Image 1 (cartoon, rainbow, N blue to C red):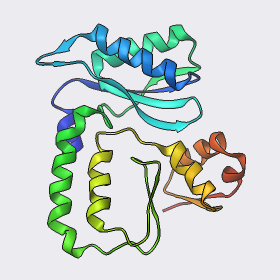
Image 2: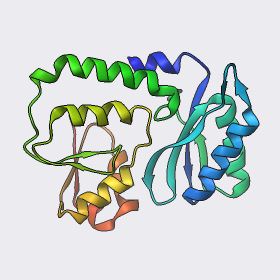
Image 3: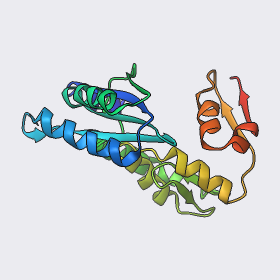
Image 4: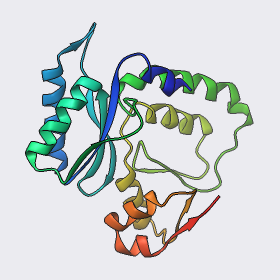
Length: 196
């Protein structure tokens, strides 16, 4: 609810971009934010929001900046630059107030939380919080994730490096499995979809 609330404070957008190197895409995001100019009392935001697979990303921010970014990506030769149905500037600084709200909500429940018995991979780090980590540390990562890029590819690669060989996608879609194929053929072959 907090992220949705923040997404309604200004016109925001999110696009999927495939086929560009990260450095090129980040440069295009900066250019789009500059050209979009000020958004009231602040500068425009346009950032890489999700690192999904090699040359596969989502970007989000102010709608005017993301619109410019889409055109820049197409001119740069992206294989894909398309709007996503979601309309929030998720995983950017525009979501920082939502992260604060989430942290407050987690703090209220911290006495009900257990220390994890296994490593918990955090997308904000692209690495795990180790078994036995204080839940308060994990809560900080969860709150930070709201306004920080999702490091999905790095998380999967770190899992594989640490010996994880089986992956499960729970839900009605097969989006994660499709991304796995682009990260690692071996991981893709060992990813099972579980309908719920």
